[in-house]
Amino acid sequence: MSEIAPIPLSQLTTLRVGAAPERMIDAHTRDELVAALRDVWSDDGEWMVLGGGSNLLMGDEPFPGTVVRILTRGFEVVGGAREGRVRLRVEAGQNWDELVAWTVANGLAGIEAMSGIPGTSGAAPIQNVGAYGQEIVQTLVEVDLIDASTGEVSTVPAADLALGPRTSVLKRHYGSVPEREAVILSLTLELEQVGTGERPIRDARLRSALGVAEDAAVSLAWVRDHVLAIRASKGMVLDDPDADTHSAGSFFQNPILPESVARTLPDECPRWPVEPDLDPVVVIPLESYDGALPRVVSTRADVKVPAAWLIEHSGIEKGFRLPRSRAGVSTKHALALTNRGGATGGEVAELARFIRSRVAAEFGIVLQPEPVLVGVEL
Image (cartoon, rainbow, N blue to C red; front, side, top):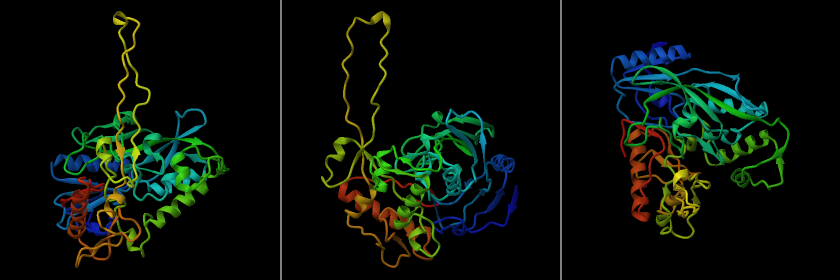
């Protein structure tokens, strides 16, 4: 590891805000990363890790602690995969989209719909990243991580991470601490060997997003190219000259509501049921079984609604800005808050607060931020 002169975080985050921290350490290997974290934790001071900086809103005051930059790279094929599949162990600092590009070129399916997502691979399990019907939970086998409380390194199965809609036990939700304070060192994915030829798309959500018929056959490369084009049209692929891409991606989570609440929204508001457990297991002790099965109680599934629809229908259009602010809603997608040039973290936060208040006033729903907020509050 190497301690370096602190770099302003506005140069290291996609929202382009944030001052230089008090201290900064670069970790280029797993051993350096483990050593750096143990060193920082031994001082009991404030700390944070930084990967691609694509899901982070920093405040304008210097971070009063140590920033550890995760610069580990690379991935390798490892054993243990099921027949017809390949397992890859990926270092936490590996650029995510470069990994996706490699898997597509080598005919490995499972993450191609997540093309163009910025940032590093180690961040993917923290919020169970996903797009167009694919999520990390579908391919993640395990992670190697180091716990902040003990400094110990362990391998944790994906099933123990409580991966859900944009969440896990490792995620620092706004206003709360993670259930498990730890840093991912690497992750292991298991991908399907399908080759580079054309094949049908099984997932209906991906077919719908790409406009592909159920019986159509396309290649992984075709899927990647079209996903990249869709994301670019929404300003969600990093492009330095395009201010619409100077963002943290989707700034607010799509709210998941009880069906009774969703029913109060206008009929034209899109909504998707959050899939319930369709095959619950009921265990009846043998000694108490009398031949009758218990009545199955049906419950209504929760409903997910698009935050972008709520924002636009609360009167905030694409391109909206507050007076004299250098932060604005993307001109391409209402869910992205962007730095139009020289904006401060405070200006981005002010815009986010205004949007939250408008949606709450119009629909009674309080949107929750997707990025990690450090030194700034909504």
